[in-house]
Amino acid sequence: MRQIFKSNGCKYDVEIFQCGKTDIVRFYEQRNEQYGEILTDLVIATPSYGFLLIQYIAEDAVLTGTLNAKYFCEEMVDDIVTFLERNLSSCRNIYFPYHIDFVTTSSSIEYNGEY
Image (cartoon, rainbow, N blue to C red):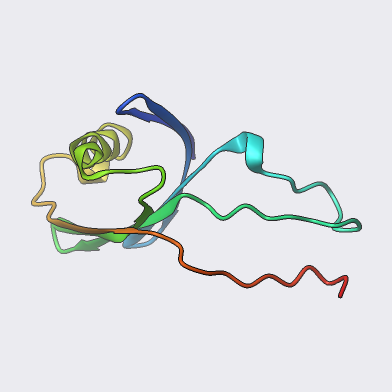
């Protein structure tokens, strides 16, 4: 399920993957997705802006995950929760505690198959 998330003057694409008692929420920008039909040339993969995990426990749910501090801030959390409640009926009218980490990348490693 693809959606658009807007908050704090920012706009991001969202994919929600539902599987049993768990949902995964991926934030990204479609314009940065560089995947074609076949990986034949140099591919530079831009990491997603963050992932959230919703785990359903009995009649309630817990929200955890990490968001890139370059794109998200604490002031956006209420908008994120409202967005999830609006787009996922399973997140409405339940006890929905959360723990979200805002992370900054300090280093990365890449292998593209060409070297």
